[in-house]
Image 1: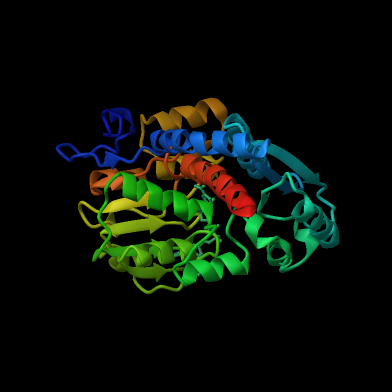
Image 2: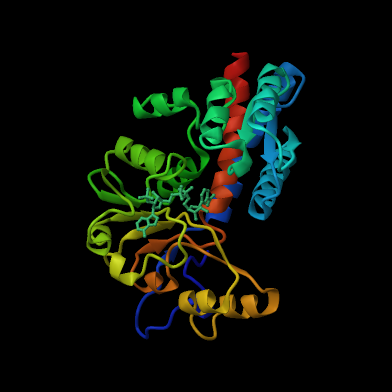
Amino acid sequence: MDCRLRPDESHGGEGLTAARRLDGTACAAQIRSEIAPRIAAFIQRHGRPPGLGVVLAGEHPASEIYVRNKIKTVAAAGCYAELFRLSAGATLDEALALVTRLNAREDVDGILVQSPLPEGMGPGAEQRVFDALDPTKDVDGFHPYNVGRLVQRRPTLVACTPLGCMELLEREKIPLRGRHAVVIGRSDIVGKPMALLLLHQDATVTICHSRTADLPAMARTADVLVAAIGRPGFVTRDFVKPGATVIDVGINTLTTQAEVFRCFPEGSRKRAHFAEKGSVLAGDVHPGVEEVAGALTPVPGGVGPLTIAMVLRNTVTAAENRVS
Ligand code: NDP
């Protein structure tokens, strides 16, 4: 398989070698095929499939897409997956009541509450809802019990996006022991668990954030650089040591020409896509990085499919753990 980025995705720069493309779509397909026998065995033994309940509150276009993809993938694998909707005006008490009902359902092994919850639920609502989950059903790994287990290096259910990044690094045989990993972003959902997982693989880890001094210089010391920021094209080539592995977690939807022109070169497929559709997806990593990095995840087709594969795997793991 040719792992190089396609020429029309290149950012120019004659004579420079394009980074190896870390194909998240192919890796996710492989993981799904490995999980299939576990699902079949569960059904045979328990007379029902592993079950996932997904809670979606409000109307957030990106969340609709994420949730649809998660349910589709989990159902296609032979599990039971059901969407539970709450209106945009739903209260925190209604969300907590729904979680309590799902906690009690025998056929629901995993519960996923799609973030963000509507602002009307008040500050801290998301954490209150995550805290209310039965930790054995917490397939996102956001409950303090599961976070604590991860910190203590005895994880049960781990946040899906960082877990997916680790799967990709392992399967692509990217060395971590003794290497310097820099994670840009310190969210509870991505940055912090990512840093812990890298640490547990014996990387030396630095976590960066919006207050980090001279971020490009810090990032340039990384053998493995993880960008989880939420700013399109933020990580430019001056952030990257030649040959480093770069994991682009960011998913940003660009809707203005100025943003698209800043992120993508003239003649690129992304500009053409924007001209046709009016929006285009961009990662946190600028395409020019492909000329410097040794390996790079694309957006889309990098971390996204792995996150979904980990939702499936965590659902099956939760089901197996609950009945054992
Ligand atoms: P958050 O907004 O929760 O966190 C962003 C982090 O980036 C914060 O720690 C913030 O620092 C840091 N940051 C923001 N601006 C800067 C800056 N100028 N310099 C340095 N650091 C900065 O985002 P998430 O962690 O939830 O998500 C990050 C990205 O990953 C988003 O694009 C999101 O869409 C994407 N994502 C993708 C997933 C996938 O499946 N591929 C799944 C989940 C998220 P500070 O703490 O100081 O504010």
